[in-house]
Amino acid sequence: MCNSNLLVIQKLLSTNAYLGHRIPTSDFKGYLYGFRNEMAIIDLEKTLICLRRACNLIGSLIGAKGHLLLVNTNPEYNRIIQRMAKRTNQSYINHKWIGGFLTNWKHMRRVQKHFQDFSAHPPNLKDASTSLPFDYFPRFRKMQKCFEGIVTHNIPDCLVIINANQNSMAILEANQLQIPIVALVDSNIPNRLHKLITYPVPVNDDSIKFVYLFCNLIAKTVILSKRSQRPKVKVKRL
Image (cartoon, rainbow, N blue to C red; front, side, top):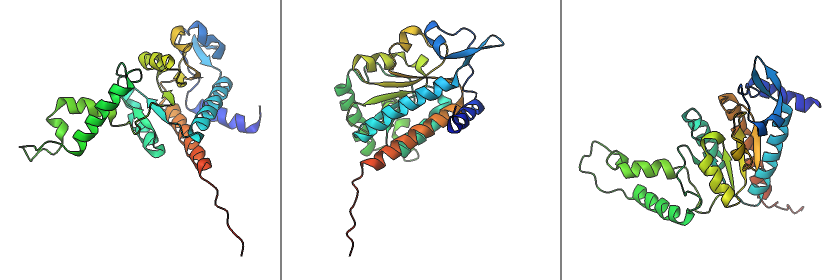
């Protein structure tokens, strides 16, 4: 193992990314290093290989002016996901997946436009003491959760899922539309879901330190790929 790989593995070890569950699923056993105290230990060399594959995919998609949709249902990760998405101008969802969000995209676009119009021109409120319109309109509050992180009108080119076990519907819809999926998969990932994920990253998805590291890695990949899109300016010598 080269020195650079060793440093990355040590960084992954510090995040507890290697800790699995007591009973891993059969499809996940290929990612295991072994067991310790009856707990599955994830092989971080394989995690690193999968991370590189995922970053290569994301880099090529962003280089071709593609767009990512980050999907997360763990409230502990909300700020991390939101900051990373805003930093890179990508879309995100930080709540329970809505059925048909991808497969019924045209309708969702109309609802999104309605939300944006409502946000830009809220109705006059009689009570001036409350400035937030969604305090008065439960439907607006629901739409805000759905669409506040969506920054594109086009269907995403790739889903990046933080907790695959809680987002089976998102995985099924993306698979149906042949949208590539990058997902953090823990050792208890159901076999039926694992088979649908294009770029699985075997890891302890309960590690907030790893999620932070992963999001930084994705952000750097997106930023570097966007820079490579810029045309080079030729400077004429006098």
